[in-house]
Amino acid sequence: MNSSGAPVPVFDHLDHLSDERGLFEHAEHSTPRREHGYCVDDVARALVVVSREPNPSTTVTRLSRRYLDFVLAALDPSGMCHNRMGVDGSWRDDPALGDWWGRAVWGLGVAAASAETAGMRARALSGFRIAAQRRAPHVRSMAFAALGATALLVQRPDELAARELLADTVTAIWTDECDAEWPWPESRLRYANGSLAEALISGGGALADDLVLHRGLDLLDFLLRVETRDGHLSVTPVGGRDRDHIGPAYDQQPIEVAALADACGTAFRVTLDTRWLIGIRLAWRWFVGDNDSATPMFDPDTGAGYDGLEPGGHNLNQGAESTLAMLSTAQQARRVGHLL
Image 1 (cartoon, rainbow, N blue to C red):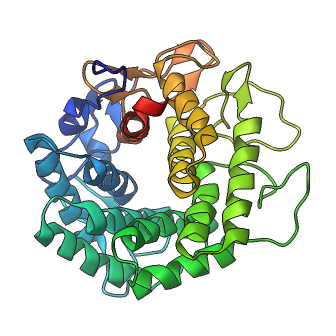
Image 2: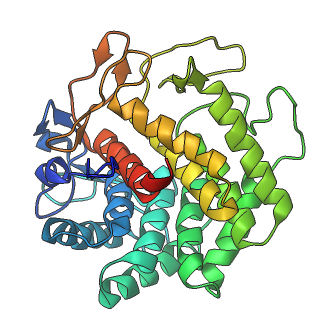
């Protein structure tokens, strides 16, 4: 925390999970499990986080270059993307269009808009344009990609590849059927749900489409209502959640909380409506310990996030996804800290 009470992200553990090649996916407690290798899912998420960091330290700058190199190396000329790399540096899968492709587009879009140097921004933009020529058959892949497209459009409003990708994402998520009791575009909540709402909010804002914007805001409002219990977040567990769910349920994943915080941050940026700051506050408080198990979900000294909220506390492992989810949420809380 700084003197204003806003969180200050600590990148020590993220650096500890990284080597000269990339970011290890798993950890046993705080120790990287090198045998599981790396994945674009996490490295692309890391690229988003480090690219968003203002006044980056030398550590963050070094990690930014490494993560950008990794994501670019994962791209196939066709625009598809590898995901898994072994510790020996060889890819263990064929290029495809899963969630990792969407996250790669997200990371490259944010880096193209916000990376520290002009050279990094140019390299990221080139990679974005290669990946953005494809369309994934999965709604979350498209939603993640749309977040990168929106970030890029904020800086480059005439970027045609980003605008076309964003428009196609809105079409992929949109449904004309709307149940007043269950307005969500899927029959059940799954994972990173806030990203679907955020894609519509950011898409509606960037495309000047009020209908899409308000649909996204309605979805985010619904998500906050069903994922709040007794004044704190009680988010969708790892197994998903249907309309008949009565919480709490476990294991709760930090990625769900981070997606909510990002969506609320985007909603505030687009609308300037301060009610969305409540969601960011709830998300950060979840990490601090205002959650169903009254358990802090990160180590403030190292910046390590714990892998899941359990009935009796937290999973002691401190992997990449959970650490990045905490750092991302801390960034959102810091950005609007004076308003919280």
